[in-house]
Image (cartoon, protein in one colour):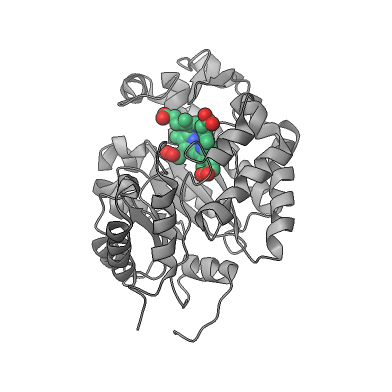
Length: 350
Ligand code: 1CP
């Protein structure tokens, strides 16, 4: 296995599919963003949505983590809420999404449309096509992404980010039909969005279900798992593997493993060796360094990465990443220490 010579795209796709690799590839969720002075310089003065619509600037910040922090994959610069205004929802970023008129009634859900995304957000696909052309020669893989229906619904119902999304959970109990109808429309949106991203050149796609970890296992089985399974079944996964991320999901791990995704991205509170045992060769794993550890000295980061790599070897395939996105204010040296340790031989198969 050690003599395999893989380029970064082959290494990434093989790890995602559970085929032999020389070592685990590495990238970071939220690798482009406010912790980089170079990102802040390009972003300067633009509203976040205008920034996402600017093809040249979005391409530039998507590529920044390659050179600046040594990531081995590029995720398109955008946001999970970029396709949502096209449904007829007025929203702004401050800095997270804020919905002008939170969705609470059946009439509001009825009025939502699932737009033709190639028309409503053509710039997303132009950014992807430009990135793919730039990355082809470097053999760096390009990732697309979407927010999962439950997480999108969480913000749409609550109106903005929240610690506990009380309105959303109230809707689960008091108006389940409204929530079901909303999730069905969002599932349609997500499938169309990810499909179009693959067509525009994304070689893998990640589904972010940041807030599904709020649920109990039985709630998750009812409200979240069916959408994941539908998305996994409808996407061209042979062409672009699907990665699923659910934050705070150690109590839901067995259910995330049943999603139909090729890779399950686990947060830092999950024991990776235990996750590998429970996955039992069915899916690959991604993760799971505590993003808070990037504030630690490089030796400590390297030590922990070595442990994660060793644990990941028990999985069908392993992609090194954080357990959640890079935190604002993270020192760039910490991020570099992470990718450097990931690329070094420590913890790799003998
Ligand atoms: O410059 C700024 O002030 C904008 C900050 C920002 C950035 C850099 C937002 C607003 N979105 C993004 C980009 C983004 N968002 C990416 C780009 C690619 C990369 O990873 O480098 C991705 C993948 C996301 C995904 C995203 N947005 C998620 C899911 C992943 C996660 O981190 O949990 C969620 C929940 C959002 C909503 C959102 N958009 C922006 C913010 C600050 C938030 C979080 C709001 C909250 O805390 O509730």
